[in-house]
Length: 272
Image (cartoon, one colour):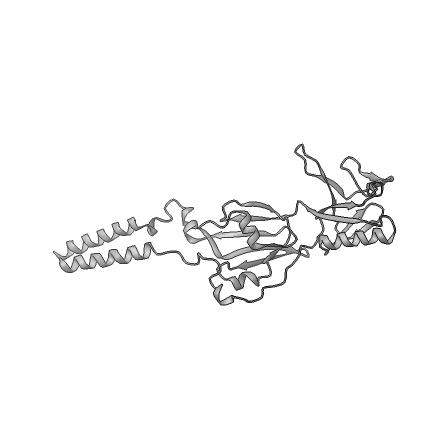
């Protein structure tokens, strides 16, 4: 019985060691020490695409000059010319923001100046271009133009604490910004296989990013996100098993202790 008792203890110890072992690939940036001082990729600014919406405000010391470029939500025409690509957004009782919609050709229809190509440009480049055109045509000599993104964002789904839509509020928006905005991954999220779905030139692309590797993350083509990207965090095997009521039964210490007791009883019975 002494030998059987020892066998039982060894089996129990091995089972507890396996069942209580920590899951792999939990820590982010596991290679951070090796990458100390290495230069990351250049910042990628958001660039306008068809169907994007922007708010454009012209500033000047002369309010009369500015008024001809100010379109209210209630006024949909300017000088008898319909402005078809301006839509009012916002609401809920607050002030409405008038947004210029980028059409399929990548243009907006701006008062006085007419059609302006904005596709592929950053908001700063659009602001500089409009300001320059106003000065060149001597419409507003001291024009200061501000361009803001309207309702631009990405979606984060899967094993994160607060899945949903995330607004983009700065010119360059990273995958880490998106993850931070939704409260980080849950403990059951796969950190080494973050998926980013992107539509570009009417084609769908899927990328995978390993958050456990700083190099893989920082040099990924989707480290800087674009508007309308979809970030998906896959569940790990434990989370998948939880979808089945008995899925994790074989991974609990209690189950294996019971199994070890059964095996021990069986051995004792057969040794008699």
